[in-house]
Length: 216
Image (cartoon, rainbow, N blue to C red; front, side, top):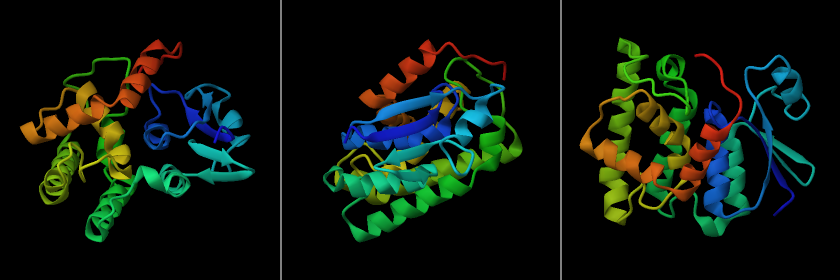
């Protein structure tokens, strides 16, 4: 499906873009990238050329525009059902959707104080009481999903095999890595599994090679 185009922010900072990009890669779909560097004088104007919401990411396919990262992931799951981006089991699928939605709408403190940054080592920065509470909730979500679904399914990810839920939490994994957050051994094992994905390795390598850089 080479007629797919993902309009996205640059890889160093765009956590929202990483999610559908990773879903597309894991689904094995071919797509073009239109990269718009963030935090530039013309960023808003360039995004507005593609996105009705004025935000990235946006997926363009056969004249259809789909904006919002989770909506794009859902669309990708429908384009490539064989990729099984949602768990086959109904209960697991319901919980996967719930944790994805919670990630989509929540964890404001973590987003604010530990923004995604793949160029710098920012260990020791950004921790507040509210951010610590967000991280504790995320670790609890991960532990519950792994215990109830991931481990019984025999996979390394939240629900066994890679799903949209893992795509939604992939930027969190990079944040915890960048800011040197101490996590449980179980959380560390899950983070390592996400970071070991070839697509994640490709994203991070591309981010480090980007010419755009800004002071935090």
